[in-house]
Length: 168
Image (cartoon, rainbow, N blue to C red; front, side):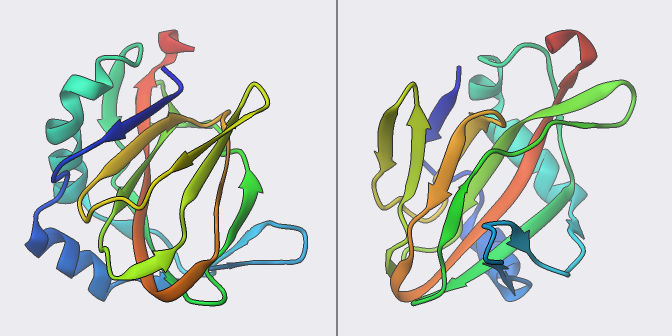
């Protein structure tokens, strides 16, 4: 499983509103690297909710263990809300786990543009405008980007899935 789109309410309206209130602006430098000096938020309850609601999808991933409670909430403005093509990086987690997959949860719908694109085997896959609460689960190694937000403000939560070391 390289990309899995989750339709439905990954997080409740109340949870999404709380997360949007703590959202921070994000941008990229000229090299396309993400720049955000904010530390991730530690959100154990949200991590548990995401793990529970996505469990049937997580079983597509070898040996899922937990969702990383260290999360970032991005606030992407019209005219500056592009995320340049990049791959996420695996990293060591607690108790011999490894973060191998990214999880995005779209927190609102009141924007235009900002579509997420993936490139797999030279083919571009465009994720249409998601509904608030929809999610994406994908391997860190998959090339992806976010197109510029054209109008409004896009809020998205980003976290990772820890798998057992054996999952490789």
